Length: 171
Image 1 (cartoon, rainbow, N blue to C red):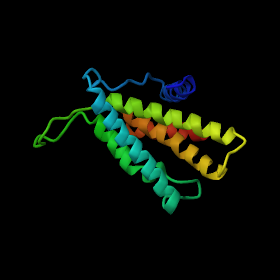
Image 2 (cartoon, rainbow, N blue to C red):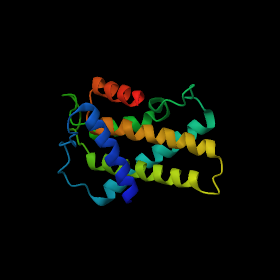
Image 3 (spheres, rainbow, N blue to C red):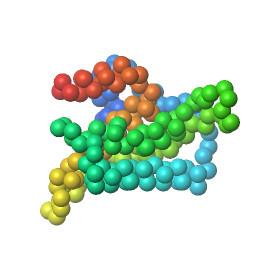
Image 4 (cartoon, rainbow, N blue to C red):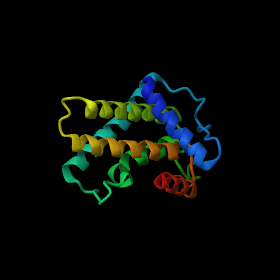
C-alpha cells in the first residue's frame, strides 16, 4: 500500500476516534490465525470482484441514485455482506462449522479501497480525465464504502455510526 493510501486510512480512523473520543480497536477474533497466502489472495480476489461488479451494475442501472448520490449500502450490498462474513466471530449453535473470522482480508480490502481512491483522484487531476462525472461518482462511492467497511471492521454500534455520520455532516 502506498503512503498516500495509508494516510487516507489513518486519517479516517483518527477522525472517527476524535468524534467518538475513544481508540478504535482492531478485531481480535482470527487476527492471530495464519491464513495461507493462496487462501488470502482468493478471499481478497472475491472482494475485488464484488466491488467491481457492484460498481459496474450501478453505472449500468443507476438504480440506487438519489438526490445526494447513490446509497453505498444499496450499491454494495454483496461486498458489505461479504465483509460481515469475513468478520463473523459467532455462529448459531446448530451451525455446521465454527466461525472463522478473517480480519486480515478485510484489512487488505481497506488497502485496496484506499489505493482505488488514490487512483481515482489522480485520474481526476490528470489532463486526460475522461468521464469526470463518472470518476467523481466512483470516488464518492468508494470513499463512503471505506467508512462503511471501517465501521464493520472496528465493530461500531449503530448509535456510534449515526454519531460519526452526524458529526461528519456538520463539518
